[in-house]
Image (cartoon, rainbow, N blue to C red; front, side, top):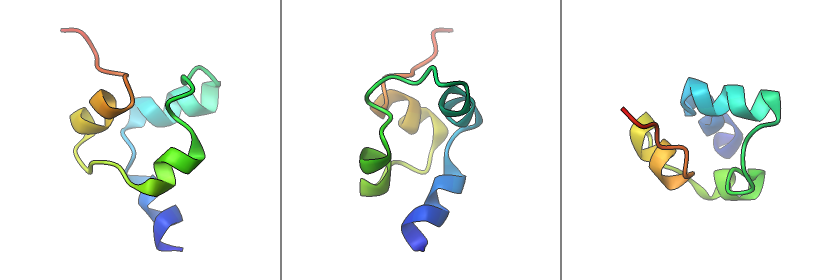
Length: 53
């Protein structure tokens, strides 16, 4: 239960990519359940979704 609840901490743009089906193969359920940074920028970097400013 705790592992699934942690998914609610995903950055909004990552959730949107998952719902749209535009996420890359690096954003897989198995990888997400292993754990990920709480900070959104850290999530983007780990999942190769870093935004360019």
